[in-house]
Amino acid sequence: MPEGDSVYRLARRLDASLRGRRVVRSDVRVPQLATLDLAGRTVDEHVTHGKHLLTRFSGGLTLHSHLRMDGEWTVTGVGRRLPARLGHEVRLVLTTDAGTTAYGLRLHDLRAVPTRREADLVGHLGPDPLRDDWDPDEAVRRLAADPARPLVAALLDQRLVAGLGNLWANELAFLTGTSPWTPVGEVDVPALVDRAATWLRRSATVAGAYQVTTPQVLPGRARRGEEHWVSGRAHRPCLRCGTTVRVVDERPGDPERRRTWWCATCQPGPVPRDRTPVPVRGRPRA
Image 1 (cartoon, rainbow, N blue to C red):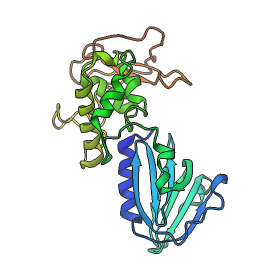
Image 2 (cartoon, rainbow, N blue to C red; image 1 turned 30 degrees about the vertical axis):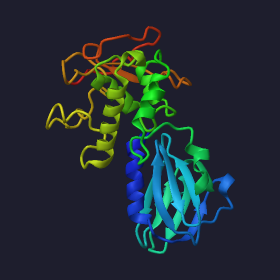
Image 3 (cartoon, rainbow, N blue to C red; image 1 turned 45 degrees about the horizontal axis):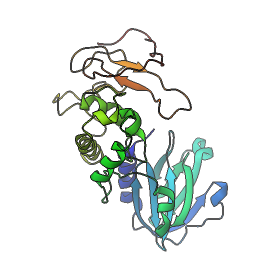
Image 4 (tube, helix red, strand yellow; image 1 turned 60 degrees about the vertical axis):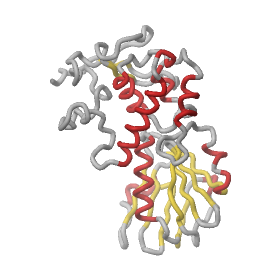
């Protein structure tokens, strides 16, 4: 699933192509917005809150979308069209006065609201490190409110801090040096929040740093398969100590039990006792 930095970078790309452009044709292909016509409106900007994308138009209208696991946006140039084989996946079409066309494929939760009422859609979310209104103290307060909750589960709760997905939650647990199941009350929460904000901003805004968590500690080692400390590295040696990275699979239907990777040596603490480790498939790579 795209994380907050993914959606933030998408918003910047869409701004580069669409911001300030007038829509000359729109086609919204979801039943609840079948009568919505955006033609004549100007794209003011794209903003994000966590994993949510808000496209603001002139006249005080906002279109909300969520990518979930499979959504995407693409923009074609003048005279170019989306391949016909993708037509059934299109949920939104915006053609601008510059001749470019934006397609939203497999978008989820498409809703239109007055811009002044965006909070109706995203007001439940916690502070987002990528927003101008980022409030680290509020993030600390929310995370610390349930000290018994496992660290990774708390980081994944978008009501506490918005924008951290499974990759970042697992990597932050490693960078913090604690088991993913350590109660959040046993962690230095202000330091955790500062680290989370620093890394998410770096990933979102620094060229070549997108979702790379290793190079500041291992300079020059951001090669394929070495971009992360533990995420996606099941059954491979830990890049710090050489211990085999462990993984347990998610429990379907339980948002508290996502796929989790960790190094038992670098991340001491509780381990799950009611979940089955993912079996080794093939020979581990060095």
